[in-house]
Length: 312
Image 1 (cartoon, rainbow, N blue to C red):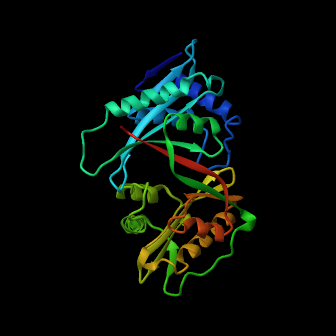
Image 2: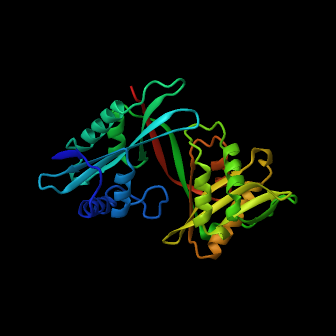
Image 3: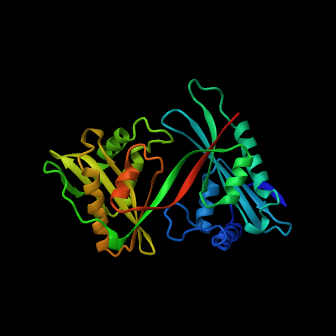
């Protein structure tokens, strides 16, 4: 068994790892309709290896790929530097120390690559596991990781989609246009200000998002011609449409605007053939989003746990 750092995954290795994921999907209880956990393709895995700060490949005695681990990092809005460790071990090789070795080596390299002391900045390790992944959770917890927060994945059958409800009389709803990027970025920044476990995407990502989205499923609420909220949905295949993001400027919250936007885009998605709507939101409901979605008929499918550990 080997575990080595690689700069890139060639096509045969990527295809081999993708086959491992596909075989393990049933064992791991992967929901094929989930918008939070997917079975990666060979292209996905090559992209992960290319974009990672470090990518480690585990191979069996015959050179066949049996697992991988990757390390990436970012700085959240509160100044916390998060070093995320991700990976997968083939089901037949679990319980043999492969995952523990990958995790240990990635943690050691993260410690070695840690930048010098920065005032008011804390560095932590991060890792993810879904609530049903007992072996992954046990591995992380045995390595000293603890759950810091969790995300709830919620679903709604098309037949249960809520009826439309008009926005307040002084609010108009229209399709988004590419020129909305700066305004929507400002709305999101104001709506998410002060939130834990969050890193605000750059303005360029909003321009890119609007450039590739179906703008008839990207709706904007405006007052006096100024955008004050938005909702975006995106078809994910298999009859599933994801409610990707909803945000309303704090000055206009608690007026039913978010509910009106969600109802509007849900109706549009169902009219286009969506059989199920899905979304992911904060499980502990700090801003009331989970309560909003529950009020619209969404039910929790499962929770996705976000683990952290001090990078000592």
